[in-house]
Amino acid sequence: MMDVIDLRSDTVTQPTAEMREAMAKAVVGDDVYGEDPTINQLEADAAAMFGMEAGLFVTSGTQGNLIALITHAPRGSEVILGDKAHIFVYEQGGMSAVGGIMPHTLSVQQDGTLKLDDIERAIRGDDSHFPRTKVIAIENTQGTVGGVPLSPEYTQQVADLAHRHQLKLHIDGARIFNAATYLGVSPAVIINGADSMTFCLSKGLGAPVGSILVGNREFIAEARRARKLLGGGMRQAGVLGAAGLIALHKMSQRLADDHQNAAYFLEQLKTVPDIDILSQHTSFVFFTLTDSAKLSPADFSAKMRQHNILLRPYPGFERKFRVVMHHWITRKKVDQVIRAMKHVLR
Image (tube, rainbow, N blue to C red):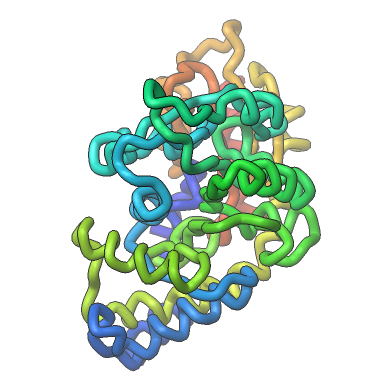
């Protein structure tokens, strides 16, 4: 599989040899009983790293976000979030279907933020005609506009606004380590003021399965109940947690390599015909195939596949492509991709 250069997402990463060995040797117990020492260590380490009191291992970022929302917000209440947020666009409406929570969407700006004035205006007054606003949710990095990192200063402003109105701030931090790395700040600083945050172990950090939800002890105790409700209670989960510990402590330290490879790829793209470059932030590069290109986007993807290179149009955008760098993509492979693109588009 590693002979294939897969640029579709950082979700395609596979566990390293070190992770596989740790998984084989993991000390395990029943996590539903709170007796899996590897999971307990992973949850504690993640919480400490982000300056939170407690953590919860969940099967996915989608599950972690849903657990956070239904823990913060009772049925019939409302969450304010972006119209391009992963929670709103790509999580099958779980907040409504499962949690009975109403989304109140605001325009996501090109820098990944929601305007503070828009948030303020969206907060409902105490009126029996309206659902009660309970949560503000932001995404860092904001994937749909290019993997854009949000600054700690902005996050603190949103948190302050939320808390003035007795609301909670949740962060979908699927790629929060990319944001922290890009901005050169600690994990705790990047989530300034947040009440909860979910991050993925199975994207750029390379673990095979899992995400972590962090917050205060009371919140995580309730979140654990919500996880059980959703069928997310696991038994000897330390087999997965062992890989998660390596992802947390080791793989999080190498993300600058992915960012540098993305910047290098962007520069090399300038030499490829029939490509319009859109943006590069963190590990993401967006480009479009021009209307003058001889190949359709589908044909371009098929031709690249013949070179053992996987990429595809970004969902909902026929000619727009997203390329994501991750730890299986070396500088040598980037050069290989550029050569293949030039050959296919000549």
